[in-house]
Length: 284
Ligand SMILES: NC(=O)c1ccc[n+]([C@@H]2O[C@H](COP(=O)([O-])OP(=O)(O)OC[C@H]3O[C@@H](n4cnc5c(N)ncnc54)[C@H](OP(=O)(O)O)[C@@H]3O)[C@@H](O)[C@H]2O)c1
Image (cartoon, rainbow, N blue to C red; front, side, top):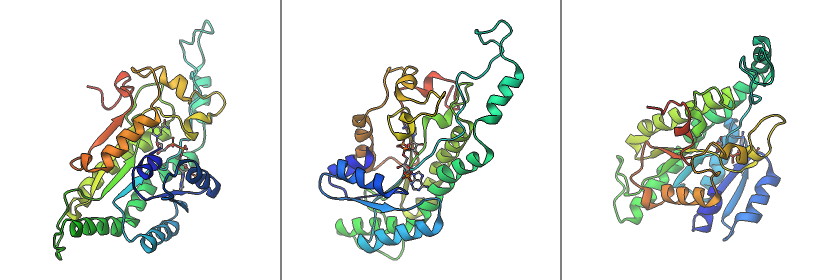
């Protein structure tokens, strides 16, 4: 959705994924000007990241925006979880049934993989693309007719890292979908905030995008017994619907454009009010 919105409105967009055929379909279906460029790579692999950054540098020389978008969801709880007040039996479920449900939904290595993709990878991706983000700043300074000094001077609209977290990363309620996903996304959000300060001396902004429920491969291809489909999840959204392509298009065009140039260190929540409906670290 974001790549399509950006390319259809004039940007050159490099998209990265491990499956070449999925990238090719995205290019075929969403490119309007032939400027969505597929790059096969694995963001959890440092040598792959370096080769991705080198490809973009050789072809383009700079970037204005890095979107840390890739994410995975594992360790999905079955719903409803066995409960002592389960209405289907007089005595409710046993603690053993509850324990088994939690123990058996994925493995510790699923936790590790989730943190690797959702937290470690956006960190290293950002580092791998820093030089190109800096080149985006110096290029825009030149366009504005400003001298590029030895020190850091920043253009009106600076380069930006946008890290995609999730409104799920704020959840502390008992109906949380996945412990590893929620915990990792809490760290993803923290990373985006931390980067805003770490990169500030270089005039590079960092923001966090925290979507609620949007239809995608992640949410539509649900595991058996797991309610992770946009329709059932949308029932808990105050606006009574999942997010749409139009919602995401407006959000990314705002954040990527001059209109959003003063947004820095922000957590941009686009969830139809869902997280305010549940107990979360945003509750007050
Ligand atoms: N959809 C929602 O409702 C929702 C809500 C909140 C937050 N989010 C977040 O939004 C982001 C996008 O999610 P989505 O719903 O679009 O999920 P998706 O349909 O599963 O897409 C995830 C993408 O990440 C890529 N990816 C995963 N691991 C990768 C790796 N190691 N290296 C390179 N690419 C990798 C996948 O491609 P390959 O498998 O081919 O590598 C895929 O294209 C994620 O961070 C997700 O957590 C989504």
